[in-house]
Length: 318
Image (cartoon, rainbow, N blue to C red; front, side):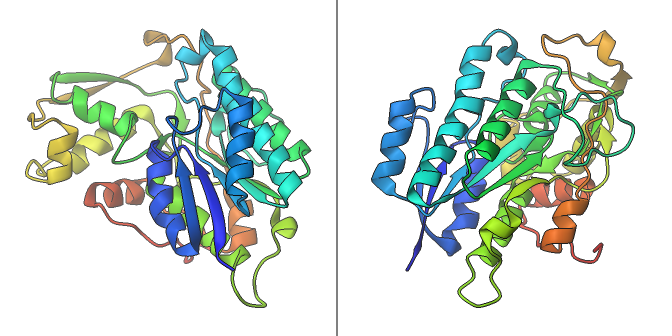
C-alpha cells in the first residue's frame, strides 16, 4: 500500500524542499495557506479527515520573529494550536506526525550546545508559541518526531541568506551582529534528513524502524557554529565571482553586489522588538546515535546551497 503523506506549508522555504524529498516515499498531498488556513481549527480537521494520511508532515509555521511580539495570538494559533490539533487528529486515525521546532525554545544562557533534555526557557513570543506547540504534540499520544532546527535558510523564501544578498546590492557597508551564535542550517539538508529518517521507518522490509520506538524530540542542525557576522561574510565570499550564476542573478534581481565590507556590531547596537538568544547552538548527538548520521558542517551546507546541490548525509563523523 502506498504511503499517503499530508504536507502543510508547501509554499514555505522548507515545504518546497520537502515536496521533492518526500515524493519517493509515497503519495504527497501538499497544502499551502490558500488551501489550508492554520488559524481555523475546523479547516484543519476537515483537511486531515478528507485526506486520511498515514503521515502528517507539518512544515508550516509563523516565523516572523519580531512581528510575533505584536501578533502573539496569531503566532500561537499557527505554531501551537494548529500542530496540537494535527497531532490529535493523527492519533484518532492512527497516523504519525513530523513537526519542526526551533532553537529559540532556549534562553541562550548556556555556553555549550543544548541537549534535548535541557530545560526550555524562551525569551520571545515566537519561541514561546513554538514551545507550546511542541508540548501539545508530545501530549497528544500520537507517534511523532519533533525536529528542532535553527537559523534556517534556503535558495527560496525569506531568510538571512537572501536578505544579505539583497542588502549587498544596495550598500557598500553591512553592519551585522557579532555576538549571537548558532548553526545556520539549509532547508535542503533538513528535507533530506527528514526523508532519510522516514524512509527507514517506512521501509518495506523487516529492518524498518518502529515509529513508536523512535518517537520523540531531536535536534537537527548543521555542524559547527558561527555568528551572524561570520555567516554574512561567508555568504558574500560564496557569492564572489558568481555574478553569472542564474540563481544568484535572480536572488539579486540582476543587480551587482556592491558591498565592500562587513562591520561587526553588538546586538545592543541593533535593537529588535524580539530578544534573541545569545547562544543557541544545538547538540545533534541524539540524532546521530539513533539514526546514524549528522548534517554537514554549516559552511559545507552553504557551499552546496550556492551550487544547487542536494548533498547526502555525513556518516563519516559517526
